[in-house]
Amino acid sequence: MAANGAVSSSGLIVSFGEMLIDFVPTVSGVSLAEAPGFLKAPGGAPANVAIAVARLGGKAAFVGKLGDDEFGHMLAGILKENGVRGDGINFDKGARTALAFVTLRADGEREFMFYRNPSADMLLTPDELNLELIRSAKVFHYGSISLIVEPCRSAHLKAMEAAKDAGALLSYDPNLRLPLWPSPEEAREQILSIWDKAEVIKVSDVELEFLTGSDKIDDESALSLWHSNLKLLLVTLGEKGCRYYTKSFKGSVDAFHVNTVDTTGAGDSFVGALLCKIVDDHSVLEDEGRLREVLKFANACGAITTTKKGAIPALPTESEALALFKGGA
Image 1 (cartoon, rainbow, N blue to C red):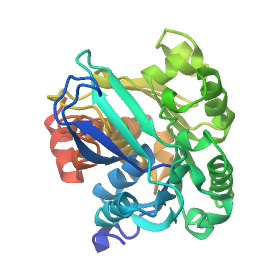
Image 2: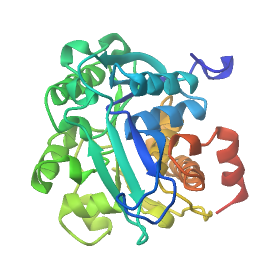
Image 3: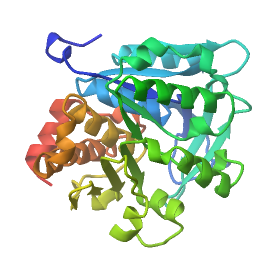
């Protein structure tokens, strides 16, 4: 599936979870009720990460379930067009592909309204998993939305275990979406229920506050989330860059300053870039100099993604990212 011979030796990054369609208002700064019309934008954090990896020349696959409907087949087509392996995708004849209406209000906050009752991604069963694909992953990446309901939760746990047993590095971005959970308490409990399995975890500043119950975004707060299996904990801080924590060192990397239009997908772009750079050499996680370079590159990818509307159309190629990376912050 590699776009050219040069990348065919790189390890496979498998993303597990949801893919859906975001409907975004044709005008910005309005509530969903006031929006005159909507544009459809493919999304879903794990799928965004898979496409981010493929755009950067890495090998990516997506595991999840879509509706056997026009939108589901459109999304599967988008993965294929972007060079993401689709042999982990299932289609559900009885449930629709998930939809989300997303608006950026005048105060800059995002407002979400989800159509999932239930959507196809929630109905993925453990028996439907392509275990051969999952076991061939060098990195297995996932979020927390797939933990909300059964049977998808059991499929998530089985996939994670199969990947781990086969020697994959486990990467976790909780990607908190509170409106989808029965309660904030349930969200916190379930997100943390698989916390100690992951070796790479990325949280945003908002997620750090939510998970720790503290309004401080500092080293002490971040390190309260540390566990002994972790190799790298990342806290992304938007235009303030990111902080990193490992067993041996910690620090921060500044962001790149760009003209931000839409922050959707920036975190997924950051994660995709990081995973691309460590998939073949996990020792980067123990070398602060090399890790800082990788995080600077990931910051560049995240920054570029904010300069265009939508997640997938804005995900950069390696040459675009390197141009900003070399141009300096």
